[in-house]
Length: 297
Image 1 (cartoon, helix red, strand yellow):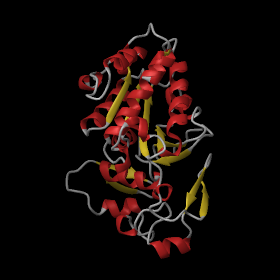
Image 2: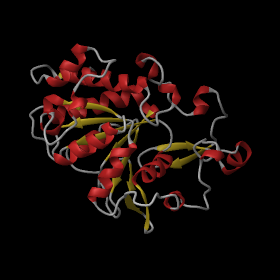
Image 3: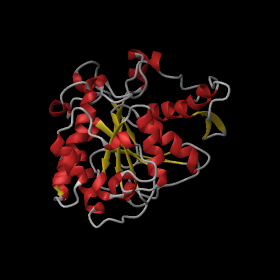
Image 4: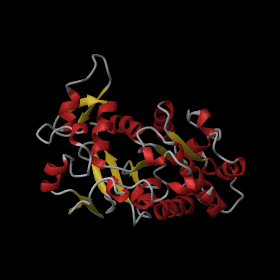
């Protein structure tokens, strides 16, 4: 599985270098230069370093103090105040005021309802900076190499991206839990329906949607890049939603299920993107090569 790990890592970095929807401008550069260049503005000398810290569960975020926020006119993550919703108005509530009649809505904490896109935008502001890499997969491993592939790819991307990326799961067992538990150096968020809990002991749980279907709709809107391992109809649905809006899809086709094209998985997402080398894409398909090569591709 070593070859598959290498291949997948190359494809993820390639999508990051192309600049996926909502990704920072800094990802618009070559993939080899991408790692380490996507951090907050203060890491690039564009603003002073944050002086505070905030416990995010399994990691500690650098945040701007109240004094810095007032002086620099930024939020705690360094975002200019002009681009954020004032603290006195909950973001989901502000978004709900702008719903277009007939637009599909989802529930948010506090009994509010907002559009799917606005819910994703609200969550993105809570997550903070960094390219958002979402993980999709089955709740139990079926293939003999799928677990090793998932764990190896998580470790590879964790080492490569660090704080430059944010990894997002749906808080479910199987593929998502395994991935989350192999990212010790990165920020991990688990998006669950209202009242849910991942039970991972890793990352921070976020809530959106009054039920699983609503949560899935939001999940399909929040990421820049989606990695898929195995999966059924639910994985295919979220991949369709993500692909439709232009997000990058990295299907580990060798694992079968939705990732291989079943259950209505978007067929165009099974074709290599323009930047991908044919050899790397082939390693995502072939189950007869070492997992590590598929990961690094």
